[in-house]
Image: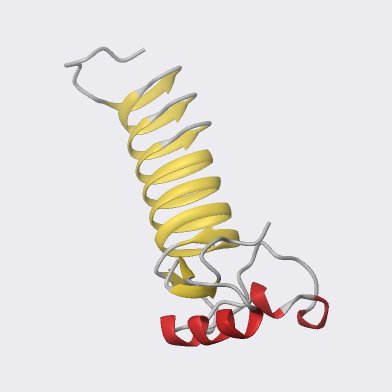
Length: 141
């Protein structure tokens, strides 16, 4: 386990390894592979870094199942830019085809469009969803 003030190793393995390349339970380094990796490139279950490929990730460029980042790709996620999705796309955690979903589950590129839809639905306000806007002040459950 790395101690505070330790110099990073070139390659580190273990419970909390600190290295240029880190592999372990909570690895920290430039390239981190493990359960909770933190680094420039993070690959694992819960990743935090600049580039992430993981199940639950937070970073600048993130790919995974449930992710948050500046640019992201995955089943569910939040961030200013979803890679490969058109503006106004359906918010992704609502499953099924468009014809099966109520209109209040749609996200809009502008706040004004979401407000107009909120008036039609009989609710007030809007809420942000990444870079998009959704009608009603509360997210539907």
